[in-house]
Length: 368
Figure 1: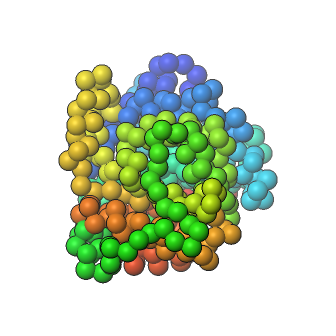
Figure 2: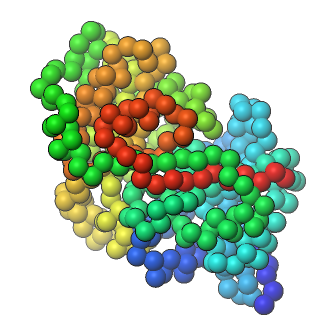
């Protein structure tokens, strides 16, 4: 049967794009289906403020009339300006085990990128550096943790056969006996506020102002990080819309010096055991089950730790570390989101918390 690649321009194409993963993973017990409504929201270029400065194009490959592969391509010229490299990014890649399908999909994506002036195609980014990213390259039989990508092992072969090569490796970490580890290694009785610094939890009573404090810290702390672009206020509010479905105020720590926010620790619940039975679709009655099910979750994910550059050699990191230990003693299992291989400070902090390497992910690149 002949292959054809379409740029998605109608509701049927978008429906095929969104439902393709359900076909690919239908017999996979590890996969946790993302909420289809959230994927739609993220890929709505008119609603998502990230696309104020970036373009989005969605592609789907058909074999005959059957959808068999998909991807989205993002071009952000702000990234070109900051990093001096004309990279386009692909994400939301899914495909049946068919090299021809993947090859035709990326051939169409490459032509589009070339017309836009891009010189490299990198990914996966879903759709950017602060979203789920990377292709899983090992430990395929272990449970998928929240905010962690998952894919079949053959995806590596599909990308390589389409001319991509690995340019960056990322990994996550885990401690499956955190509560005992904290009690054995750290004194939990010491106070936290000292030296002009104050430590507190996130306050729901002034949520927008608190989110702005977090954005301020992270934009400063991560400004020199790999692929990092500062988030606008609108981007951060958009990304945080459902934040308190996946966390509690007590899992977010803010360190202040006077009235200035200088450090942030953000943890989220590993909600995947609740998400998996939903199969990507949420009904009104599911919200009650979801909120009730959160009470039984006993593992959390360190989403981010940020300290403003001017405070990185002060007590702020120690205050955040001690706060983390106090939180972790209540949760048996703690894991991390991705970190780069060369992030020495994050690796060292993870080792102090007893976190061991768990899964490895790769970013692929193709020269155009």
